Length: 302
Image (cartoon, rainbow, N blue to C red; front, top):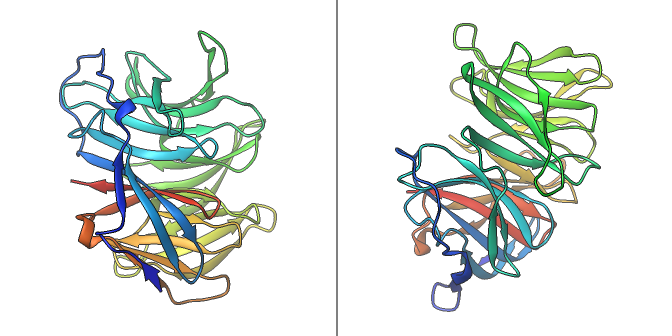
């Protein structure tokens, strides 16, 4: 079951995040909104208590790739309609302020905490050579120290940390087809996990690489790859057209399709609908981010 009544759900715009941008760029990617849903998420239901818009500072721009730092702070990728590039922003949802974490001439995407570090990493689109996509490490400090993590031969689209030494990347290969690769940063050794993966990559609770396989054009599958045993396991078919997912602390997977949110309990093969946000005009859900079982951030494209 799920509880959702537009009359008693409080949609609260975080007014303190409306500070104007100091940067002037050009065309932005597809416009999108970020909503945070507070409540209780489980394998059986999503009891939503409050929904808040996070991007009132950029209502008609690009806002995407949320990642929780803690209960109150989240990294996002954002670009104003007049901007030429994306930046990584940190939103503090409790104290209601935002900080540009990158401020550079390059575009940055996919801000993610670095394991055991306190800093964060991101994909950076280099200006020299133009279009080269690398992974950068931003250390804590004022100003923060920046260091390359990966600048190898593969073009990085997306990535996920397994631990401080291993990182899974979505390698863009226009001719051969995109690949999911595991990189040992200490040796630069690469292991091919899959061809034609989805854009979402996560470390599962068991320490495996969780991803969506799009090798079959008709059916997409949620899979895991165990780097210790080199075994791949099919978890379940994905809801049609869906490739973004998250995992609860009990092992339940969460995915979305259009306006609906689904759960997949551990061991189950059938997705269960736990919320439908169509009454709120949220009909094109993409990326997700979860904090424990209390908060879900979703991206809704315009």
